[in-house]
Length: 253
Image 1 (cartoon, one colour):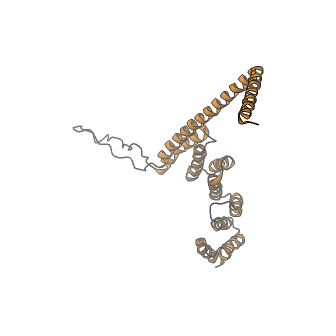
Image 2 (cartoon, rainbow, N blue to C red; image 1 turned 135 degrees about the horizontal axis):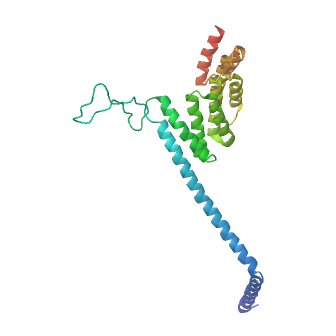
Image 3 (cartoon, rainbow, N blue to C red; image 1 turned 30 degrees about the vertical axis):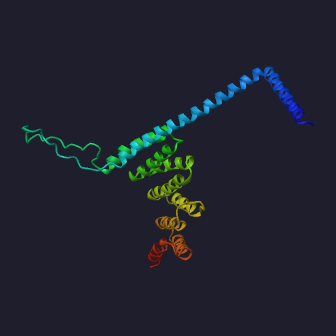
């Protein structure tokens, strides 16, 4: 077959294909229109979602940052008021001390001011990373305020909704809060779980040392000795082994 004939056949095939495509498009114009409309709507929805998500994340981070500013503020006692130049203040009615802006008179006052800000950020944006971090910080603040049951409840929400390192830290925080609240069985169970995890970002022997401490405070001396012995024998190269040996010596003396 000559080259010109081959080109002619290809041109005919292309013309036939284009004609068939045009006929199909004409017959299915309504379906094509609907399909294109759906694609446009889906694309717009996806774009709107990402814009909304970025906006939400930004708002959550702003609230978290505001709470952190309060938590990290300086503790400064109220300062004596300085009377205006030329004023004749009466010794019998001294001016009230003034709190320096951005500071708090006590650590307790600072924590109590930061707590509602953390809770507000967590409740407003509970599923965002910033919101979960705010809830974790609220729990840690409650521990410092010795409101252990409330702290445990907040830690539980972080554990349920969070993942990765933050959830692990919440489990550790819950165990510590339970220990300080004298809820020894809960603390022991929590430290046991942490020491058994293979995905933990913290040394196993560190969790075992905390478990031994929980056993000791609960009056379970034999369990404490057993756990400390495990650290000394199975994790001899760990920096926690020496501390474990010291604690074991105290219990055996």
